Length: 319
Image (cartoon, rainbow, N blue to C red):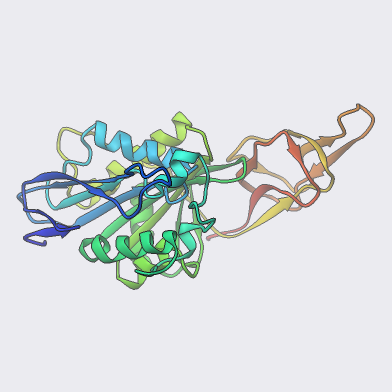
């Protein structure tokens, strides 16, 4: 355990609580724009955990989960330190957009640069100021482009420690996925931070079931690390389904989309997943499952074009 943690020249000693306002740039109107970093420290030694959300500014469900952790005081650790950043991409959050004002995806520019683009500078300071103190992390995301993700954890394959943490978190699904170059998860992995990436819900939306899965999984995660306060109760985890491989199913025609299968459902090969029709009542087309599997992402947009990704289906489960 670090005796003192110093973030942006603010020092937090064991037993202290402090909110640090990160400011890298102002709005173009010269209005100050702060990113609150909420730090809660116990006097008892223990690990440091980061809960972050809002790398993509329109993925609000993750922000809601971290907000609830703070409101319910789940972020007050029995031992160690908990750092919460409910919104990292505050610019995108203000504008309800995924990207930074410079058009860049923050989750593709890590570890960033002190003199690079605006997004790159944000990535640089997060890696420089916060991550060196962190032992474990959960980064909360949601589906983009009107596609709804079933609550799921994503981890790299062949990492038993992360698999144990995923078992403890107990989301309905766990996907094995390799780190992507430039991602926050990849940079954290290189700095030996054990990170779970949570996906659930869709952009510009808050879903209560997804929020509950995120909160309950986080409590189990903290309990496993012996950091959860005794006043908080944990629930039984899901028997998470491990998915080794998955495929995107794309729209075979353009038109109005009528989804027929619920998120998380298991479908057989040939099952009709959706009907795509023209707006004039003359033509309709069936979209069928190419193989059996679980639907872990479902399109929620009423209009689709041929080739749009509309379902994400598992193709190989872990034995």
